[in-house]
Image (cartoon, rainbow, N blue to C red):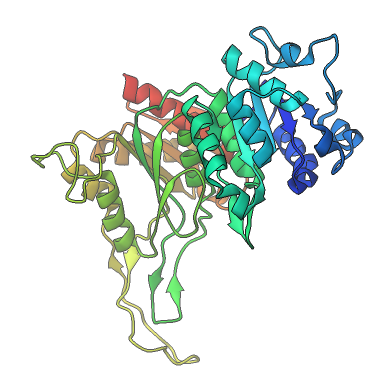
Length: 401
């Protein structure tokens, strides 16, 4: 996600500085090269040696005749992005006022003047975060194009955001915004059909691929809605569903008004229509009439399975021109069989392209797929994060074409 990206990591004197070692490690795991810059207050919380260990590089603790702030964040400087994490109320206020009395704030002034992207991850007590002056400073700095990664408000504290959220923000700041101005709806995860109030029929899908696609689209500038089987994420608006019918209805609502809608750009709720749908969810093919009460165990049962609504058919009927990316999982392990199955759904539903894979990759971090369109089938192998990036890249090319 951050291959080849140089990150200058500015560390201020919040107790959240103790998390910097793991944050630096995660940035490097994602491919970044990291150099630390510390205020004097930060050095009272975490030793520069720890930051040097985490970044595998020299740490800037004072500015010397080398003019380290220009070396790192100047117009021809080393950094592709300046990440201020954690950022105190004091540092936010200084950045907003161009006060340069620490290596971190001087790097920030230099980066902002040089057009280097800046990402800020604040961490402080909640009353400090709610101070009108701090809020004004945040608003002012945001107006300059700085990306703030919202803290987690817990236990009276504005705690630093998760490593995943910070890494995503850094990736968004340093990745070409090929999907800027686009609304993309992504479906993800498994659906489940109730047998009774306790039991369900479901499948082995983990939702990793769909979440990776949603994150990759967000990183490239898209406004993303994720319709999935549960949990909030930091990179998309989320809609939680359980059954195939709920997935069907929620996705139709998320993509917005159909082409026959006189308002053209919005549905009845005022939502802008989607520019694309990526249907990565493993949606139940069958449903069953659920019992009103828990069925007794130990008794033989016969369940009558009825076909569930086909999501892609429903979306295509109401949105004949919407670009849609479909997925097709097979168990044969044979590429030609997967390509044939993918082309069947491609032509039936007029899809932009289909991502075909063997069902054995469900739940795993690594995957192998085939990108299938009307003319070609291209193999891909890698992590699901890398697959998400490849899908987002191909989707941007489709929309621009």
